[in-house]
Length: 343
Image 1 (cartoon, rainbow, N blue to C red):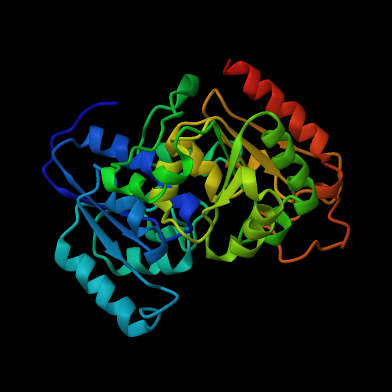
Image 2: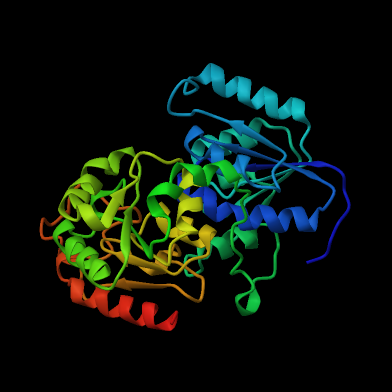
């Protein structure tokens, strides 16, 4: 990539979910490399702001609570005015929403970059093809003109970790062989059956691991159920840690097992072996773990799969075969390979 000296300001708009935010970091890292004396600001939602605050490549984080306190039209107008006053030279938007397009439209920034399948894509001066067959990291790098041939796109998110973060959990995990399990998801049809997860957790414990259960506030009950069953060999951090604290915790583990959700991408930021279980979604959507130590598993011999890009609250045909036909024995077989690979 050619390094350009511009000394100007760049805005990256990423107001999607936590996993999407983490997958935007490699793009920001290479953007800073390309325009090495520019300042890069990020527009994001409150839930992901911590990720960008801890990036050494981000100058300012603009938090936009689009579904909360700032959801009104008045706040949108104020946000557009702030972007205008900042006098950005370029805007890159990996997020493809209608609201983002409106911000772009009224920003008065001349150089704007977005994907060709974005809402109101005509508002972007430069459009890049959104290749559904590529990984999301690679797609985002294409947005800034980065050459992604020969797997050069496999760039890991970089974050700054403060020493005091580990003080929250060091007394619990010290001197233990650790494996992490993230059994939850915002989307119910992405969640591997809990009775199967219990089999996997028991295998990990029998193999000598102390199991750390991680997740957000919405995962507390599920993780607590696992903790109560395996109380002497596990601990639940669900709802206790921020995203960056969770990544810091993962860096101390030997491996992570999770659904197709944000913890997959936290595993990439922590650079640990990650096994991602795909139920209603598929790896081909481009959100699989991509370091060489990791793997994924999916039961694909189903006409109904995938049923959607994200998932649903309930299985549309009420069978949830994508989860139940993916027996825990298959997961354990993959885990044995990953564990033996590290010996």
